[in-house]
Length: 117
Image 1 (cartoon, rainbow, N blue to C red):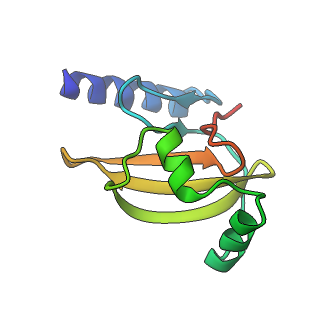
Image 2 (image 1 turned 45 degrees about the vertical axis):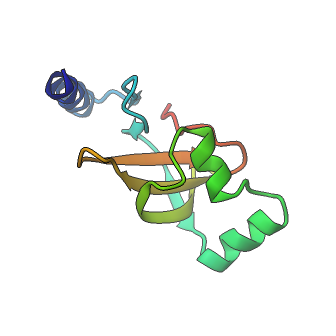
């Protein structure tokens, strides 16, 4: 089943890239959103992101993770806050217990996943 979902995701993503679909793909139970079309802007320094959180402009990274079902003990491989289409998003990768990585792009102000469009 897991392999079948992975193959479906690869075929759908390849189709969107090949045929110019400007959307995103999210698989139920897999987590994360794989975006195809976006405008990636500047990324904040860790200090800038921390200050924005302290000032209440962003939710904390732990809040964002919990809101999206990422456990406190999850292995986060990288994390940054970048502007996507003019809005701040936490961009991070989580190593799942079964091995593959899951990429997340979640709006820093409310935890909403990035959806291209």
